[in-house]
Image 1 (cartoon, rainbow, N blue to C red):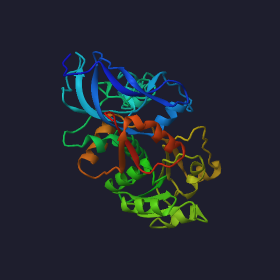
Image 2: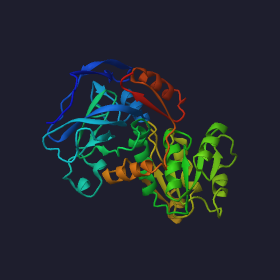
Image 3: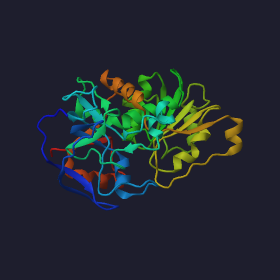
Image 4: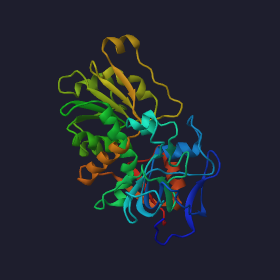
Length: 353
């Protein structure tokens, strides 16, 4: 196993009990297994999923104690003896999908996130809120050396997730997609990917600040759900022909938007659900859904090919993530802001602070 100077201990934020808070403490640095790499995390984005992992409010068990985080960008400092295609010093990203079996039907068909043996960073295995993190070599993102590790970190979950969702929408260049929750961390990135993919986008969110942000990021129109007297009519009116968008991307963190999205889609429209409000349910009128041939689908995270495609959009300068960097020691403060719905854009943590 090749390596460079690696300490035996590191700083990390650890969830020691369900509900938190996270504990900032020293823990051992792990050694990579035969098919794994050790990445010196330079920056890690903070995702709403990380809050769910700490609170334990999803119907999926987490490990305890747990090091959260799954948007880690850094440098490979050690590799297992079976790893041949990643070199010490390469840039690499540790994302939500930490590893999979690579041999089941899902893995062989490019649906690795659906693998029953999938390892999830910051959820079922320790993630990136530490200075050094482990991942399966086959699944780490290969980050081009010209990319800035600080600004690329949020792409490793938020970027890949919305890019995958846009692909799942089947919307073609020139068509229109509504982005619900467009002013948040996921939505603000989705607007940029949509523009880069040749799509028109209708941003749905609330407030002048988010309106300005969405329009600046490439939205074709903005609908404020907090002031609209008829959201369905306003969204349809924002399309070129008044028929409604061809697809809708739901990245909202509340349940209500999921219940009305099928109403403003045009016939044969596609509703793509990405956001995961805890305990939320989705419903739609059966008659209307059938006679207008509406498709309702979920979109999880991207596979390895989606990852590299999403990173290439970033590499070419087409995606800019609004973020603020603070020290890893302040992670609990970010969770508090998330819980109070006071997050604008994305936060990135620096493990050395």
